[in-house]
Amino acid sequence: MQLAGLMRAVDWVASRTGWTRLGLAFVSGLGAAASLPPVYALPLLLIVFPAVILMLDGLREAPLKNAALMGWSFGFGFFLGGIYWVGFAFLVDAEDHAWLLPFVALLFPGGLALFFAAAFAAARYFWTNGPERVLTLTLCLILAEWLRGHILTGFPWNLIGYAWGFSDAMLQSASLFGIYGLTLLTTAAACALAALVSRRGWNTTPAAVTIPALMAGLLIANFAFGMIRLADAGDETVQGVHLRIVQPNTPQEEKYVPHLRWQNWLRLLELTNEPGLERISHVIWPEAAPPFLLDSDPDALAMIAEILPPSATLMTGAVRVDRAKGEDQRGTPYNAFQVIDNVGKVMATYDKAHLVPFGEYLPFADFFEAIGIRKIVVIPGSFGRGPGPRTIKLPDAPPFGPLICYEIIFPGAVTDPADRPQWLINVTDDSWFKNTSGPRQHLVIARVRAIEEGLPVIRAANTGISAVIDAYGRVRARIDYGRQGILDESLPVALSLTIAVNLGGYIFAAFCLSLLGWAVFLGRRATPQV
Image 1 (cartoon, one colour):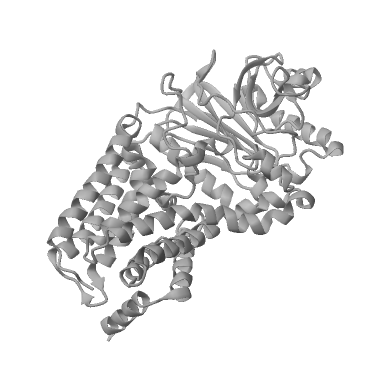
Image 2 (image 1 turned 90 degrees about the vertical axis):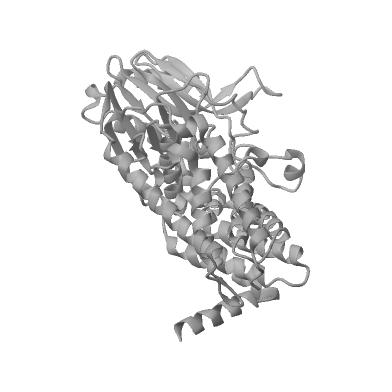
Protein backbone atom coordinates (compact mmCIF):
# COMPACT_ATOMS: atom_id res chain seq x y z
CA MET A 1 0.00 0.00 0.00
CA GLN A 2 2.81 2.40 0.85
CA LEU A 3 4.55 1.73 -2.45
CA ALA A 4 1.30 2.18 -4.32
CA GLY A 5 0.76 5.52 -2.57
CA LEU A 6 4.28 6.57 -3.46
CA MET A 7 3.73 5.73 -7.11
CA ARG A 8 0.50 7.73 -7.13
CA ALA A 9 2.46 10.69 -5.75
CA VAL A 10 5.11 10.19 -8.44
CA ASP A 11 2.48 10.16 -11.16
CA TRP A 12 0.76 13.22 -9.69
CA VAL A 13 4.01 15.23 -9.66
CA ALA A 14 5.00 14.16 -13.17
CA SER A 15 1.58 14.98 -14.60
CA ARG A 16 1.41 18.58 -13.36
CA THR A 17 0.87 21.17 -16.07
CA GLY A 18 0.60 24.92 -16.46
CA TRP A 19 0.51 27.09 -13.35
CA THR A 20 0.34 24.07 -11.05
CA ARG A 21 3.69 22.85 -12.35
CA LEU A 22 5.23 26.30 -12.03
CA GLY A 23 3.86 26.66 -8.51
CA LEU A 24 5.27 23.29 -7.51
CA ALA A 25 8.63 24.25 -8.99
CA PHE A 26 8.55 27.50 -7.00
CA VAL A 27 7.81 25.61 -3.76
CA SER A 28 10.62 23.18 -4.61
CA GLY A 29 12.99 26.12 -4.92
CA LEU A 30 11.91 27.38 -1.52
CA GLY A 31 12.58 23.90 -0.13
CA ALA A 32 16.07 23.87 -1.62
CA ALA A 33 16.76 27.26 -0.04
CA ALA A 34 15.71 25.86 3.34
CA SER A 35 18.60 23.40 3.15
CA LEU A 36 21.05 26.28 3.44
CA PRO A 37 22.26 28.14 6.56
CA PRO A 38 20.86 28.74 9.07
CA VAL A 39 17.91 26.34 8.63
CA TYR A 40 19.87 23.32 7.31
CA ALA A 41 16.77 21.34 6.29
CA LEU A 42 19.05 19.16 4.18
CA PRO A 43 16.64 16.20 3.77
CA LEU A 44 14.37 18.46 1.71
CA LEU A 45 16.90 18.20 -1.12
CA LEU A 46 16.02 14.51 -1.42
CA ILE A 47 12.45 15.56 -2.17
CA VAL A 48 12.71 18.72 -4.25
CA PHE A 49 15.32 17.60 -6.79
CA PRO A 50 13.60 14.28 -7.60
CA ALA A 51 10.34 16.26 -7.86
CA VAL A 52 11.72 18.60 -10.52
CA ILE A 53 13.16 15.62 -12.40
CA LEU A 54 9.72 14.00 -12.45
CA MET A 55 8.18 17.25 -13.68
CA LEU A 56 10.79 17.43 -16.44
CA ASP A 57 9.84 13.85 -17.32
CA GLY A 58 6.24 14.92 -17.76
CA LEU A 59 6.85 17.76 -20.21
CA ARG A 60 5.16 17.10 -23.53
CA GLU A 61 4.30 20.33 -25.33
CA ALA A 62 7.09 22.86 -25.99
CA PRO A 63 9.46 20.99 -23.64
CA LEU A 64 12.35 23.45 -23.86
CA LYS A 65 10.17 26.48 -23.25
CA ASN A 66 8.33 24.82 -20.38
CA ALA A 67 11.58 23.50 -18.91
CA ALA A 68 12.99 27.02 -18.92
CA LEU A 69 9.86 28.40 -17.25
CA MET A 70 9.98 25.64 -14.68
CA GLY A 71 13.67 26.28 -14.03
CA TRP A 72 12.99 29.98 -13.62
CA SER A 73 10.19 29.28 -11.14
CA PHE A 74 12.44 26.95 -9.18
CA GLY A 75 15.23 29.52 -9.20
CA PHE A 76 12.92 32.34 -8.20
CA GLY A 77 11.77 30.35 -5.18
CA PHE A 78 15.35 29.38 -4.36
CA PHE A 79 16.72 32.90 -4.45
CA LEU A 80 13.68 34.55 -2.91
CA GLY A 81 13.91 32.16 0.03
CA GLY A 82 17.70 32.24 0.25
CA ILE A 83 18.53 35.93 -0.17
CA TYR A 84 15.33 37.66 0.89
CA TRP A 85 17.45 39.58 3.40
CA VAL A 86 18.93 41.78 0.65
CA GLY A 87 15.71 43.78 0.78
CA PHE A 88 16.44 44.90 4.35
CA ALA A 89 19.26 47.11 3.04
CA PHE A 90 16.66 49.21 1.24
CA LEU A 91 14.93 49.94 4.55
CA VAL A 92 17.95 51.54 6.23
CA ASP A 93 17.18 54.80 4.43
CA ALA A 94 13.52 53.97 3.89
CA GLU A 95 12.53 57.45 2.73
CA ASP A 96 14.77 57.22 -0.32
CA HIS A 97 14.88 53.49 -1.03
CA ALA A 98 11.85 51.65 0.40
CA TRP A 99 9.87 52.24 -2.81
CA LEU A 100 12.39 50.02 -4.60
CA LEU A 101 11.55 46.94 -2.53
CA PRO A 102 8.94 45.49 -4.95
CA PHE A 103 11.44 45.79 -7.78
CA VAL A 104 14.24 44.25 -5.69
CA ALA A 105 11.97 41.37 -4.65
CA LEU A 106 11.28 40.59 -8.31
CA LEU A 107 14.34 41.65 -10.26
CA PHE A 108 17.17 40.34 -8.08
CA PRO A 109 15.96 36.76 -7.50
CA GLY A 110 14.26 36.83 -10.90
CA GLY A 111 17.49 37.74 -12.65
CA LEU A 112 19.51 35.10 -10.82
CA ALA A 113 16.79 32.55 -11.60
CA LEU A 114 17.69 32.84 -15.29
CA PHE A 115 20.69 30.62 -14.59
CA PHE A 116 18.36 27.85 -13.40
CA ALA A 117 16.12 28.47 -16.40
CA ALA A 118 19.07 27.89 -18.71
CA ALA A 119 20.14 24.80 -16.76
CA PHE A 120 16.69 23.19 -16.89
CA ALA A 121 16.27 23.96 -20.60
CA ALA A 122 19.71 22.56 -21.42
CA ALA A 123 19.01 19.42 -19.39
CA ARG A 124 15.67 18.90 -21.11
CA TYR A 125 17.32 19.27 -24.52
CA PHE A 126 19.47 16.21 -23.74
CA TRP A 127 16.73 14.37 -21.82
CA THR A 128 16.50 10.61 -22.33
CA ASN A 129 14.06 9.60 -19.55
CA GLY A 130 16.41 6.89 -18.29
CA PRO A 131 18.32 6.93 -14.98
CA GLU A 132 21.08 8.96 -16.62
CA ARG A 133 18.78 11.98 -16.63
CA VAL A 134 19.75 12.66 -13.02
CA LEU A 135 23.36 13.05 -14.16
CA THR A 136 22.30 15.30 -17.01
CA LEU A 137 20.42 17.66 -14.72
CA THR A 138 23.25 17.66 -12.16
CA LEU A 139 25.80 18.59 -14.81
CA CYS A 140 23.67 21.38 -16.24
CA LEU A 141 22.95 22.76 -12.77
CA ILE A 142 26.59 22.81 -11.66
CA LEU A 143 27.71 24.49 -14.88
CA ALA A 144 24.98 27.11 -14.43
CA GLU A 145 26.14 27.68 -10.84
CA TRP A 146 29.73 28.10 -12.00
CA LEU A 147 28.58 30.67 -14.55
CA ARG A 148 26.56 32.46 -11.87
CA GLY A 149 29.77 32.79 -9.89
CA HIS A 150 31.67 34.39 -12.77
CA ILE A 151 29.40 36.30 -15.19
CA LEU A 152 29.13 40.08 -14.63
CA THR A 153 31.61 39.92 -11.70
CA GLY A 154 29.71 36.93 -10.32
CA PHE A 155 27.51 36.23 -7.33
CA PRO A 156 28.39 32.74 -5.98
CA TRP A 157 26.27 33.09 -2.84
CA ASN A 158 24.30 30.11 -1.47
CA LEU A 159 25.84 27.37 -3.56
CA ILE A 160 24.20 24.09 -2.53
CA GLY A 161 27.48 22.83 -1.05
CA TYR A 162 27.09 25.35 1.78
CA ALA A 163 24.19 23.22 3.04
CA TRP A 164 26.85 21.21 4.92
CA GLY A 165 27.76 24.23 7.05
CA PHE A 166 26.49 22.47 10.18
CA SER A 167 29.21 19.78 9.82
CA ASP A 168 32.92 20.61 10.00
CA ALA A 169 33.66 17.10 8.72
CA MET A 170 31.52 17.32 5.57
CA LEU A 171 33.10 20.64 4.61
CA GLN A 172 36.69 19.35 4.68
CA SER A 173 36.60 18.07 1.10
CA ALA A 174 36.60 21.73 0.04
CA SER A 175 40.36 21.46 0.67
CA LEU A 176 40.47 18.99 -2.25
CA PHE A 177 38.04 20.27 -4.86
CA GLY A 178 36.55 23.48 -3.48
CA ILE A 179 32.96 24.51 -2.96
CA TYR A 180 31.99 23.85 -6.58
CA GLY A 181 33.09 20.23 -6.25
CA LEU A 182 31.15 19.87 -3.00
CA THR A 183 28.13 21.47 -4.67
CA LEU A 184 28.36 18.97 -7.54
CA LEU A 185 28.50 16.03 -5.11
CA THR A 186 25.59 17.35 -3.05
CA THR A 187 23.41 18.06 -6.08
CA ALA A 188 24.13 14.66 -7.62
CA ALA A 189 23.30 12.89 -4.36
CA ALA A 190 20.08 14.88 -4.03
CA CYS A 191 19.00 14.00 -7.58
CA ALA A 192 20.07 10.35 -7.36
CA LEU A 193 16.86 8.88 -5.95
CA ALA A 194 15.03 9.86 -9.13
CA ALA A 195 17.08 7.23 -10.97
CA LEU A 196 14.99 4.56 -9.23
CA VAL A 197 11.58 5.76 -10.27
CA SER A 198 9.58 7.01 -13.23
CA ARG A 199 5.89 7.24 -14.12
CA ARG A 200 5.99 3.61 -15.25
CA GLY A 201 7.14 2.39 -11.87
CA TRP A 202 10.31 1.39 -10.10
CA ASN A 203 13.51 1.05 -12.09
CA THR A 204 15.80 -1.55 -10.54
CA THR A 205 18.18 -2.05 -13.44
CA PRO A 206 21.89 -2.11 -12.49
CA ALA A 207 22.37 1.37 -13.97
CA ALA A 208 19.51 2.81 -11.95
CA VAL A 209 20.62 1.20 -8.70
CA THR A 210 24.27 2.12 -9.20
CA ILE A 211 23.68 5.89 -9.27
CA PRO A 212 22.14 6.36 -5.79
CA ALA A 213 24.37 3.64 -4.31
CA LEU A 214 27.49 5.35 -5.60
CA MET A 215 26.33 8.77 -4.45
CA ALA A 216 25.60 7.43 -0.98
CA GLY A 217 29.05 5.87 -0.93
CA LEU A 218 30.68 9.14 -1.98
CA LEU A 219 28.87 11.03 0.79
CA ILE A 220 30.08 8.48 3.33
CA ALA A 221 33.61 8.73 1.93
CA ASN A 222 33.36 12.52 2.09
CA PHE A 223 32.41 12.35 5.77
CA ALA A 224 35.16 9.81 6.52
CA PHE A 225 37.75 12.02 4.85
CA GLY A 226 36.62 14.96 6.93
CA MET A 227 36.77 13.03 10.18
CA ILE A 228 40.27 11.74 9.39
CA ARG A 229 41.46 15.22 8.45
CA LEU A 230 40.03 16.76 11.62
CA ALA A 231 41.53 13.99 13.76
CA ASP A 232 44.98 15.29 12.78
CA ALA A 233 44.01 18.94 13.19
CA GLY A 234 45.79 20.76 15.98
CA ASP A 235 45.14 24.02 17.78
CA GLU A 236 48.50 25.67 17.18
CA THR A 237 48.72 29.46 17.14
CA VAL A 238 51.27 31.98 15.89
CA GLN A 239 53.56 33.07 18.70
CA GLY A 240 53.56 36.75 19.53
CA VAL A 241 50.35 37.59 17.64
CA HIS A 242 47.47 38.45 19.96
CA LEU A 243 44.34 39.82 18.34
CA ARG A 244 41.55 42.00 19.64
CA ILE A 245 38.47 42.04 17.39
CA VAL A 246 36.12 44.91 18.14
CA GLN A 247 32.40 44.57 17.43
CA PRO A 248 30.76 47.97 18.15
CA ASN A 249 27.20 46.91 17.24
CA THR A 250 26.38 50.31 15.73
CA PRO A 251 22.96 50.34 14.04
CA GLN A 252 23.30 51.18 10.37
CA GLU A 253 20.59 53.82 10.67
CA GLU A 254 22.69 55.67 13.27
CA LYS A 255 26.17 55.20 11.86
CA TYR A 256 26.42 58.44 9.90
CA VAL A 257 23.86 60.59 11.71
CA PRO A 258 25.82 63.82 12.36
CA HIS A 259 24.95 64.22 16.04
CA LEU A 260 25.75 60.54 16.75
CA ARG A 261 29.10 60.29 15.00
CA TRP A 262 31.13 61.34 18.02
CA GLN A 263 29.29 58.84 20.18
CA ASN A 264 29.93 56.07 17.66
CA TRP A 265 33.60 57.01 17.45
CA LEU A 266 34.02 56.97 21.23
CA ARG A 267 32.37 53.54 21.36
CA LEU A 268 35.09 52.17 19.09
CA LEU A 269 37.85 53.69 21.21
CA GLU A 270 36.33 52.56 24.51
CA LEU A 271 35.92 48.97 23.34
CA THR A 272 39.45 48.98 21.98
CA ASN A 273 40.76 50.27 25.30
CA GLU A 274 39.09 47.55 27.39
CA PRO A 275 41.35 45.91 30.04
CA GLY A 276 44.03 43.65 28.62
CA LEU A 277 44.94 45.92 25.70
CA GLU A 278 48.57 45.92 26.83
CA ARG A 279 48.81 42.24 25.79
CA ILE A 280 47.35 42.85 22.31
CA SER A 281 49.54 43.12 19.22
CA HIS A 282 46.81 43.75 16.64
CA VAL A 283 43.42 45.44 16.98
CA ILE A 284 40.90 44.78 14.21
CA TRP A 285 37.89 46.99 13.54
CA PRO A 286 35.09 46.11 11.06
CA GLU A 287 34.27 47.51 7.64
CA ALA A 288 33.97 51.32 7.47
CA ALA A 289 34.21 51.42 11.27
CA PRO A 290 35.22 55.10 11.72
CA PRO A 291 32.17 57.28 10.96
CA PHE A 292 34.33 59.77 9.02
CA LEU A 293 37.38 59.86 6.72
CA LEU A 294 39.97 58.52 9.14
CA ASP A 295 43.15 59.19 7.19
CA SER A 296 42.07 62.81 6.66
CA ASP A 297 41.54 63.48 10.35
CA PRO A 298 44.82 63.98 12.27
CA ASP A 299 42.96 64.35 15.57
CA ALA A 300 41.35 60.95 15.17
CA LEU A 301 44.69 59.37 14.27
CA ALA A 302 46.20 60.99 17.37
CA MET A 303 43.47 59.48 19.54
CA ILE A 304 44.27 56.04 18.12
CA ALA A 305 47.96 56.56 18.85
CA GLU A 306 47.12 57.58 22.41
CA ILE A 307 45.44 54.30 23.31
CA LEU A 308 47.49 51.78 21.33
CA PRO A 309 50.28 50.20 23.36
CA PRO A 310 53.87 50.14 22.03
CA SER A 311 54.30 47.91 18.96
CA ALA A 312 50.53 47.46 18.58
CA THR A 313 48.80 47.95 15.24
CA LEU A 314 45.25 48.87 14.28
CA MET A 315 43.70 47.32 11.19
CA THR A 316 40.36 48.71 10.13
CA GLY A 317 37.91 49.10 7.34
CA ALA A 318 37.58 52.79 6.48
CA VAL A 319 36.19 55.00 3.76
CA ARG A 320 38.90 57.10 2.13
CA VAL A 321 38.87 59.66 -0.68
CA ASP A 322 41.52 60.04 -3.34
CA ARG A 323 41.50 63.77 -4.11
CA ALA A 324 43.70 63.24 -7.16
CA LYS A 325 41.03 61.15 -8.86
CA GLY A 326 37.50 61.97 -9.86
CA GLU A 327 35.87 64.50 -12.09
CA ASP A 328 35.26 67.11 -9.41
CA GLN A 329 36.85 68.41 -6.23
CA ARG A 330 35.21 65.72 -4.13
CA GLY A 331 37.62 63.11 -5.48
CA THR A 332 36.94 59.38 -5.69
CA PRO A 333 35.79 57.51 -2.57
CA TYR A 334 37.08 54.02 -1.81
CA ASN A 335 35.85 51.34 0.53
CA ALA A 336 39.26 50.68 2.01
CA PHE A 337 41.18 48.67 4.58
CA GLN A 338 43.92 50.56 6.39
CA VAL A 339 46.75 49.60 8.72
CA ILE A 340 47.69 52.22 11.34
CA ASP A 341 50.67 52.02 13.67
CA ASN A 342 50.85 53.10 17.29
CA VAL A 343 51.93 56.66 16.38
CA GLY A 344 48.91 57.22 14.16
CA LYS A 345 50.59 56.71 10.80
CA VAL A 346 48.78 54.92 7.97
CA MET A 347 51.19 52.12 7.04
CA ALA A 348 49.23 50.36 4.29
CA THR A 349 45.97 50.72 2.37
CA TYR A 350 43.93 48.21 0.39
CA ASP A 351 40.95 49.28 -1.75
CA LYS A 352 38.01 46.96 -2.28
CA ALA A 353 37.96 45.43 -5.75
CA HIS A 354 34.65 43.52 -5.81
CA LEU A 355 32.08 46.27 -5.39
CA VAL A 356 28.41 45.64 -4.64
CA PRO A 357 26.11 46.68 -7.52
CA PHE A 358 23.52 49.26 -6.41
CA GLY A 359 25.27 49.37 -3.04
CA GLU A 360 28.70 50.80 -3.80
CA TYR A 361 28.30 51.64 -7.46
CA LEU A 362 25.43 52.11 -9.87
CA PRO A 363 25.66 50.12 -13.10
CA PHE A 364 24.29 52.00 -16.11
CA ALA A 365 24.30 55.06 -13.84
CA ASP A 366 22.83 57.52 -16.34
CA PHE A 367 19.79 55.32 -16.95
CA PHE A 368 19.04 54.48 -13.32
CA GLU A 369 19.64 57.99 -12.05
CA ALA A 370 17.23 59.29 -14.68
CA ILE A 371 14.44 57.17 -13.17
CA GLY A 372 15.32 58.11 -9.60
CA ILE A 373 17.37 55.09 -8.53
CA ARG A 374 20.51 55.77 -6.51
CA LYS A 375 22.99 53.48 -4.81
CA ILE A 376 22.26 52.59 -1.20
CA VAL A 377 25.47 53.91 0.38
CA VAL A 378 24.95 57.62 0.94
CA ILE A 379 28.43 58.83 -0.08
CA PRO A 380 28.16 60.86 -3.32
CA GLY A 381 29.35 59.12 -6.46
CA SER A 382 30.34 55.53 -7.05
CA PHE A 383 33.20 53.98 -5.13
CA GLY A 384 36.47 53.47 -6.93
CA ARG A 385 37.57 49.92 -7.65
CA GLY A 386 40.82 48.53 -6.29
CA PRO A 387 43.22 46.35 -8.32
CA GLY A 388 42.38 43.05 -6.59
CA PRO A 389 43.78 40.73 -3.91
CA ARG A 390 46.86 42.04 -2.15
CA THR A 391 49.18 40.68 0.50
CA ILE A 392 50.20 43.15 3.19
CA LYS A 393 53.42 42.57 5.11
CA LEU A 394 53.94 43.72 8.68
CA PRO A 395 57.13 43.47 10.74
CA ASP A 396 55.45 41.76 13.71
CA ALA A 397 53.03 39.27 12.09
CA PRO A 398 52.76 36.87 9.16
CA PRO A 399 51.72 38.53 5.88
CA PHE A 400 47.94 38.74 5.52
CA GLY A 401 45.34 39.33 2.85
CA PRO A 402 42.51 41.82 3.52
CA LEU A 403 39.01 41.12 2.20
CA ILE A 404 36.20 43.63 2.55
CA CYS A 405 32.66 42.35 3.05
CA TYR A 406 31.50 40.03 0.30
CA GLU A 407 34.91 39.79 -1.38
CA ILE A 408 35.29 36.58 0.59
CA ILE A 409 32.48 34.84 -1.32
CA PHE A 410 34.55 34.33 -4.49
CA PRO A 411 36.28 30.92 -4.54
CA GLY A 412 39.83 31.03 -5.84
CA ALA A 413 39.91 34.83 -5.90
CA VAL A 414 40.71 35.77 -2.32
CA THR A 415 44.51 35.77 -2.36
CA ASP A 416 47.32 37.12 -4.51
CA PRO A 417 48.69 33.94 -6.14
CA ALA A 418 52.05 35.59 -6.69
CA ASP A 419 52.42 36.57 -3.04
CA ARG A 420 50.44 34.18 -0.89
CA PRO A 421 49.43 35.43 2.59
CA GLN A 422 49.44 33.39 5.79
CA TRP A 423 46.04 34.56 7.05
CA LEU A 424 43.00 36.47 5.85
CA ILE A 425 41.17 39.35 7.50
CA ASN A 426 37.55 39.77 6.47
CA VAL A 427 36.01 43.03 7.66
CA THR A 428 32.31 43.47 7.07
CA ASP A 429 29.17 45.33 8.10
CA ASP A 430 26.22 42.97 7.92
CA SER A 431 24.03 45.34 9.92
CA TRP A 432 22.53 46.36 6.57
CA PHE A 433 20.69 43.03 6.56
CA LYS A 434 19.46 42.94 10.15
CA ASN A 435 19.13 39.77 12.19
CA THR A 436 18.37 37.51 9.20
CA SER A 437 19.89 34.54 7.41
CA GLY A 438 22.38 36.79 5.62
CA PRO A 439 25.03 37.15 8.35
CA ARG A 440 24.84 33.41 9.13
CA GLN A 441 25.31 32.50 5.49
CA HIS A 442 28.22 34.94 5.24
CA LEU A 443 29.97 33.23 8.16
CA VAL A 444 29.66 29.77 6.59
CA ILE A 445 31.09 31.11 3.34
CA ALA A 446 34.09 32.50 5.24
CA ARG A 447 34.61 29.11 6.89
CA VAL A 448 34.69 27.35 3.51
CA ARG A 449 37.20 29.87 2.13
CA ALA A 450 39.44 29.04 5.11
CA ILE A 451 39.24 25.33 4.28
CA GLU A 452 39.85 25.85 0.55
CA GLU A 453 42.85 28.07 1.11
CA GLY A 454 44.24 26.37 4.22
CA LEU A 455 44.37 29.79 5.87
CA PRO A 456 42.83 31.12 9.08
CA VAL A 457 40.20 33.81 8.60
CA ILE A 458 39.75 36.58 11.13
CA ARG A 459 36.34 38.12 10.75
CA ALA A 460 35.47 41.52 12.21
CA ALA A 461 31.84 42.55 11.77
CA ASN A 462 30.09 45.70 12.92
CA THR A 463 27.23 43.83 14.53
CA GLY A 464 28.09 40.19 14.01
CA ILE A 465 29.11 37.63 13.39
CA SER A 466 32.74 38.33 14.34
CA ALA A 467 34.84 35.18 14.57
CA VAL A 468 38.25 33.58 14.66
CA ILE A 469 38.22 30.73 12.12
CA ASP A 470 41.13 28.33 11.85
CA ALA A 471 42.47 26.81 8.62
CA TYR A 472 40.09 23.84 9.01
CA GLY A 473 37.08 26.14 9.00
CA ARG A 474 36.43 25.62 12.71
CA VAL A 475 35.13 28.62 14.61
CA ARG A 476 37.38 28.95 17.64
CA ALA A 477 35.63 32.00 19.07
CA ARG A 478 32.81 34.29 18.00
CA ILE A 479 30.59 37.23 18.93
CA ASP A 480 27.05 36.66 17.78
CA TYR A 481 24.83 39.04 15.90
CA GLY A 482 23.49 42.07 17.76
CA ARG A 483 26.06 42.01 20.54
CA GLN A 484 28.66 44.59 21.46
CA GLY A 485 32.03 43.43 22.68
CA ILE A 486 35.58 42.37 22.02
CA LEU A 487 37.21 39.08 21.16
CA ASP A 488 40.77 38.53 22.41
CA GLU A 489 42.30 35.54 20.67
CA SER A 490 45.57 34.23 19.27
CA LEU A 491 46.08 33.76 15.54
CA PRO A 492 45.72 30.13 14.32
CA VAL A 493 48.54 28.88 12.13
CA ALA A 494 48.23 28.44 8.37
CA LEU A 495 48.43 25.05 6.66
CA SER A 496 50.53 24.18 3.66
CA LEU A 497 49.10 24.86 0.21
CA THR A 498 45.93 22.81 -0.23
CA ILE A 499 45.12 20.57 -3.17
CA ALA A 500 42.17 22.85 -3.91
CA VAL A 501 44.49 25.82 -4.42
CA ASN A 502 46.83 23.88 -6.69
CA LEU A 503 44.49 21.56 -8.56
CA GLY A 504 40.92 22.27 -7.43
CA GLY A 505 39.83 23.73 -10.77
CA TYR A 506 41.21 20.74 -12.68
CA ILE A 507 39.56 18.28 -10.28
CA PHE A 508 36.23 20.04 -10.67
CA ALA A 509 36.58 19.96 -14.47
CA ALA A 510 37.42 16.25 -14.27
CA PHE A 511 34.29 15.66 -12.19
CA CYS A 512 32.16 17.41 -14.79
CA LEU A 513 33.71 15.44 -17.65
CA SER A 514 33.26 12.18 -15.75
CA LEU A 515 29.62 13.01 -15.13
CA LEU A 516 29.16 13.79 -18.82
CA GLY A 517 30.84 10.55 -19.88
CA TRP A 518 28.76 8.51 -17.45
CA ALA A 519 25.53 10.12 -18.65
CA VAL A 520 26.42 9.50 -22.32
CA PHE A 521 27.37 5.89 -21.62
CA LEU A 522 24.16 5.13 -19.73
CA GLY A 523 22.06 7.00 -22.27
CA ARG A 524 23.27 4.78 -25.08
CA ARG A 525 22.51 1.62 -23.11
CA ALA A 526 19.28 2.63 -21.40
CA THR A 527 15.76 1.61 -22.25
CA PRO A 528 13.32 4.54 -21.93
CA GLN A 529 11.38 4.38 -18.69
CA VAL A 530 8.49 6.77 -19.37
